[in-house]
Amino acid sequence: MDIVSFTQDASHLVLGAFATFCAILLWSRTRDLAWTFIIIGAIVSYADIVLSTLRAFGILGEDLLRYHGVPVLQIALADLPLLFTGIGFLIAVSRRRLP
Image (cartoon, rainbow, N blue to C red):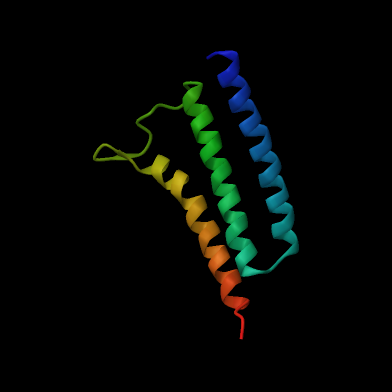
């Protein structure tokens, strides 16, 4: 692993940890359903960052949770943050309809 890849992975981990920490702080202070979905999206996104970092360092193999050759965990962790964020935005928009 060269210095560029290491710096990129390290900064991704640090900034993802910061965003996840702030999301958890917000989660403890809000009961809003739209924000809850956005927060869950941020947390799942950080799980994807951690998983990809562990795979890049060779700690976890590429064959983690495959179903008929399809990397289910990798696809789920890549797509779920977008799904949760989109649901949160839809909930927020549905509350703010113009007359």
